[in-house]
Length: 323
Image (cartoon, rainbow, N blue to C red; front, side, top):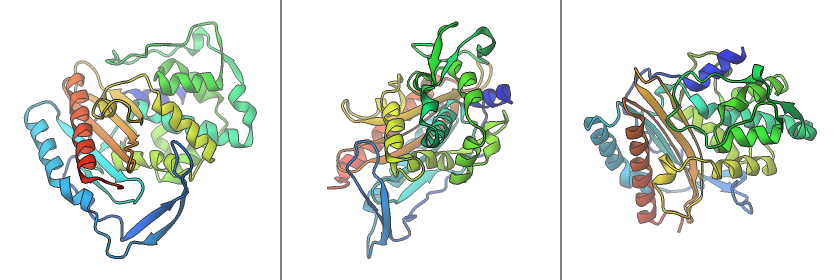
């Protein structure tokens, strides 16, 4: 099962494509949050927002659709799927948000979340030491365009906490066999079920996920609605210091906090994939932006994600969202 799970992290293909704006999906509701934390904003309740019109979404929905159309016409990207959500108030919209991709390294986020859920019952789990030996070495299935700057050393012992840091901060695939085989049974499946994601996606190479479905993991981290506030905060803090400066982060000004996870998939002889999902902590109102792409050149996909991130940030800033 472990090789199958790991293969599912690294390879992928795209199934379908269509424009489907998720407009006016707030359902006339506003979300109330607790506040008081740096990364999370615990959800307290929802209330009806009488007469509320989401001017932010309507102001740039068509322009963003035009940007995606231009990027595809230029040959920079073959397919694009994105999901945007105003995290303080709830409204969202998407472009091809139900199109499915193989998630590659994005699955490291639910894997780590499952560990912290298990640690709520057994805090000592995170300090458990395991040895990285030759039998645990992970054979890469492709040449990585963005390899980790740090990787595990054979023969060394690592705590689960250190392996989690390697998986999230450095996206080191060598940590995956050790993490997967030491995770108490059932936690990963329960997490996927809780957010409405097919648990089989963690087991089979052909498992795929939509950008809308995947974004649920970030939403429950921000709302601290699955893990404790402290563990939700810890995961987002790790995502804030990931060793990847492209994608979403490259599209926003320096100094803006971005809790993100990227994943790359595909082979040199086929279309490549690059995805990036994260929370952009715009000072007047954080928002969630997830982008999945495929195309011939992975560097072009990185540029497309950057362009989308820059466009959204500029429009959010221009609207004075949250002021």
